Image (cartoon, rainbow, N blue to C red; front, side, top):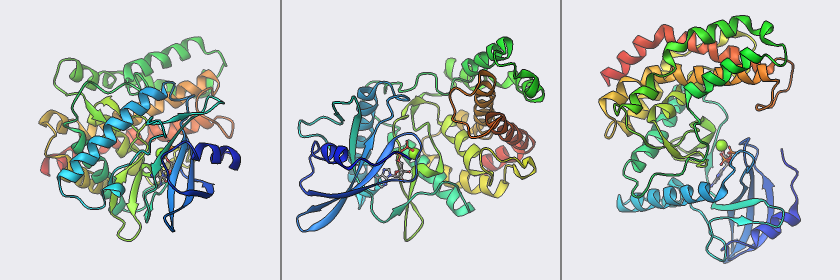
Length: 369
Ligand SMILES: Nc1ncnc2c1ncn2[C@@H]1O[C@H](COP(=O)(O)OP(=O)(O)O)[C@@H](O)[C@H]1O
Ligand SMILES: [Mg+2]
């Protein structure tokens, strides 16, 4: 958790088109990439809240490109919601508050990039899905997001993290890490390395389908974790999705695959008891029903045909990233214990096996909806 520096936040707060008096701010506990604060203002005699967020420029090297994407996407979402006659639009799409000079973010003297959003009130996010009803909301939220973006006009969005889901490139990096074995750790991960290398036939499946035009590139979210879905605090229904830094050109299957990875197993990413790691079919069913309810209007039959497979592929891809980082000496993912990345890799590979065993039943369900 970042240390809250009130003076700095006051300075940041003055840069944006907020016509109220800054009262106080607190760091937000959820989210691991950006630094997020909830700030309260006295405005027109009522208290109003805003989100001030420092963009993680270590991960997102080009904040101008990130914010150009975010502006295009949020303005498009807003225009579509208004055209549909939707109520409560500022709770159903993020609203960026520009700086006094009309810019989408503020670069302070210390080289920090800050942006501001309307605070979505009476809404909650959770770290993990607890029930099939929540899995349904997650599927629906991201499906609706993709649906609203399906007709985003203009040029291609910027690639804010190039090759983020490029399984072949991730696989090649793993092969190089095994080959060089700089940290002499390969001997500790023999089983996992053997498992990873055996999966090579799945590596190019979606990349080939994209390359030869069977799958369309679309504007996708690319970080479809449950803690990026805001749920109405009263009804528990999905309101909107947040965390738009990775919105960029991609496959809808990457989004859906990562939803399968993060919502269908009740365990944490670094669970040590592998017997608990399992793809729960009722969770998958609820997730898929929610997703298709929102997305079936635009999905092609080719996209639908890979939905179950996408869960296996994306889980595998994250698994090899953990394994690679373990072999390279834990340089990317933060670790809190020895072999932490190897533990994370094991849960992902266990989930890959569980999905593989159930994949035909999963696809059958997709085909029946
Ligand atoms: N506009 C908003 N209104 C209310 N809460 C928000 C808003 N934007 C973000 N949050 C909260 O802050 C958390 C972290 O923000 P997020 O953009 O997801 O950053 P990170 O990239 O660090 O995950 C979210 O999970 C959500 O709980
Ligand atoms: Mg987030």
